[in-house]
Amino acid sequence: MAENTAAGADEGAGGSPVAGDPEPPDGSDDPAMATARARLYGLLAATFDGEAETTAAALERGTFAAVADAFPVDIETTGLCGDSHDADSLAIGYDNLFVVPGSHYVPPFASAHATEPSEEFESDSRYHTAGEAGELLGDPAAEMARLYAAAGFSPERGDDIPDHVAACFEFVRALCEREASLLEEGGSEAKLDAVRELQARTLSRLGWIDRFEEAVASRDTVEGVFAAIARLARTFTAWDAGEVVGTDPQASETTPS
Image 1 (cartoon, rainbow, N blue to C red):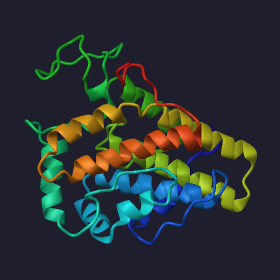
Image 2 (image 1 turned 135 degrees about the vertical axis):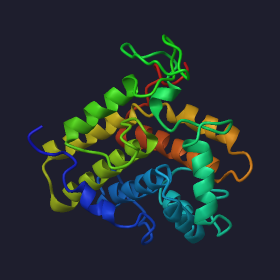
Image 3 (image 1 turned 90 degrees about the vertical axis):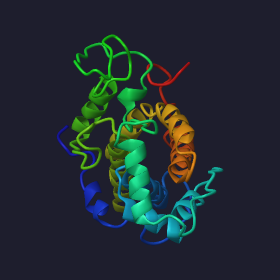
Image 4 (image 1 turned 30 degrees about the horizontal axis):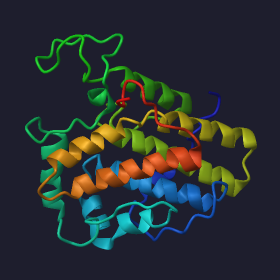
């Protein structure tokens, strides 16, 4: 593309995702809607990228609940307020769930939750059997990489794994921030359509979040904070895809039919 579709979006990434209170969005053509969506996607991206201090601050301030309440959808936020989770305990919980392979490990990337193997994938890993789904850097990663390239976007989150949940949310946040900027500046319909098309294409590939949330819920059974955040992410992305962007998460290789 001649123009970086997500251009300017990352300038806003430097701000804290827990700073300020969200304004209630009025509609899909209101910059406040796009900004509020960006705020929540940014907070989810930070959380699933292991920013324990950001997550702890958001919990203490009730930011998850405040941002979720800005949208006209019933999002369960029980357990997402209070100061009972400090950064150290959250960092340990994050590592146990999303970093260190073990009985509680949940891969935080789409390829691991695919239900069919990628068309072209080779691995000599003893943790993956050839011809089976669940690989690292499979077709979902390639699809997300193509979307990033189309927008001229380079994710900083997700450990260089294109379909990492943190990278996916970071990308949608950038697109939402770009949409807000265009709406505020009176950008052309063509530019708005291009950004919204990328949002639709991206959200349509996040059907795997359902399987991810179910896996987190089954393993984060003691503290439950990441299970609650994953539940919020699942509910919000499904609502955003269907009600705001107007697309449906794919129910093909990444979501059971």
